[in-house]
Length: 322
Image (cartoon, rainbow, N blue to C red; front, side, top):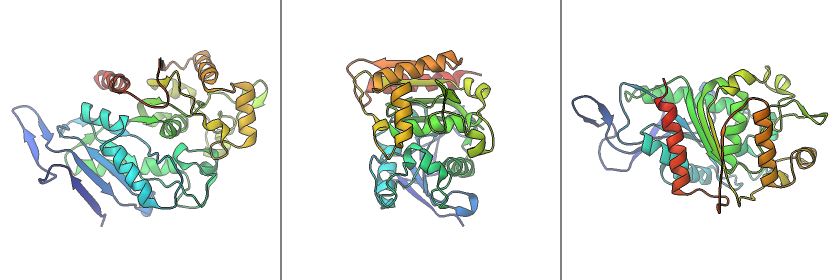
């Protein structure tokens, strides 16, 4: 039987409801840690944050935000601590979940110091080629977590739609960006910010140079067994934002890109984050991919309450669309 550990911020029974004449809702902010289940396809625990006033018995959206510890360590407890903090306190995702009253899923993926070049939290190429079961195809593991979460939430009378929202900042933005290219049909809408220097491109090549994952889509069929579905991808509403002073550039580091990938990006997309961001926008627009792009003045690699509010409003609009 599944083991589920439940932490409730307000000391009362987790399955207690607030009810009025028209709507039944979840009463308390609640955090659930669901243990790994390799038989179901996921080798790591995941977290569900359910904000108070989450509506019951009516279909709502699940929000997914990949975890980002910000450092390497072989201690899964460290990754767990950061993921719990992300889910319950300090993230754009928690803000979205709380304000829109929708559940938030955060995986507890490792980022091992013993394998420092595998940037799991950004879903890099090394991660996608990894054969160790615990690290293999984290994108598919995340999808199985989502499937499992449906059952967990359904047992609490919370119904979630087939497609889900995704959100991320920094490495988790990069994870989300890449995940959306691989599984565009799973996502209702996404928002990403501070994406570590380079967006994935909807191109097989640039200037005659093949663009393999994670720069482009040239080897999708080889890696995933199917090609990039540009039609479905174009249909995803996206909000992509950067601080004008954000110079956090993962491109120049070996854990994020190898030397060949780095040279391709620097020589064909841009050597610095601001010019690269503009080039990525142009390429998206030339390929009829039309996210809302926004740059925030006097902001570096962080978010503000005003930025968080814009992200919340973006997802609210998606919830209001039929």
